[in-house]
Image (tube, rainbow, N blue to C red):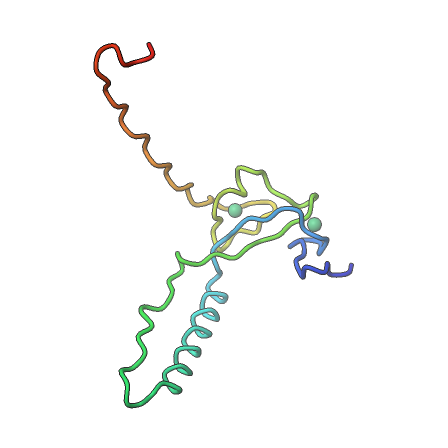
Length: 122
Ligand SMILES: [Zn+2]
Ligand SMILES: [Zn+2]
């Protein structure tokens, strides 16, 4: 199986993917991600002007900020509804064996404006 030009491949068979969804990073992936970020900050600190204030990077990333894309071909896809959600780091989809995170709540609809008598369509 050759890798598609895009570099993306089905998680199961390596075929060119047609769908994707996201899952949280595993502990190992997240540790590597934080280590990379820390190394980047260490380098920036080392290169910073010693006369100036130290660079302020803010807090390190947290797990809930990060998700990884999972790609699948037509034979190894999951349902559209499931693909719309963020899956757990332990998810082995396909087939999905986790409880995906709930979808974000939609914005509540604004209260209808009360119109003066005679202004409504009804
Ligand atoms: Zn596949
Ligand atoms: Zn899942």
